[in-house]
Length: 155
Image 1 (cartoon, rainbow, N blue to C red):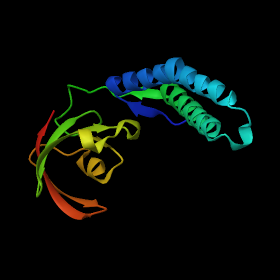
Image 2 (image 1 turned 135 degrees about the horizontal axis):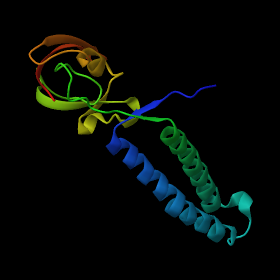
Image 3 (image 1 turned 45 degrees about the horizontal axis):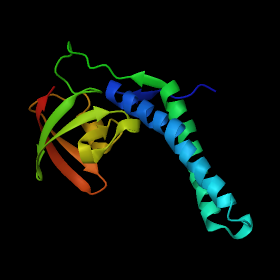
């Protein structure tokens, strides 16, 4: 079975590598020490600290596996300066709607963080913006209802 490519910017790939490095080289050792200390308390069947440390260990190991897979399957998003001015993966797009002006960067789902203006090309707004140009007004169907968005600038 071939794994699906994970679309990432260079910055996003670097963040994943940093997180993986932190989990492997720091968190693993911290959790191992917590488990060792908890075992010294005696009976493990009623040892909440031991159970908590083991649960955290499972979470961290699962996240490590996920990060390794994402990095292995990373497909870098290269912004193409020779585009025709349309919105594409990696584009920075300034838009205006009834809530005001905002700037989004179109990224792959693994990097999406709406709070910092990084929206997935698979999100309703991301899908609606792809292929559009500066000056266009588009209707976007979001979970909160339909809204009209005007594209002010594409970079």
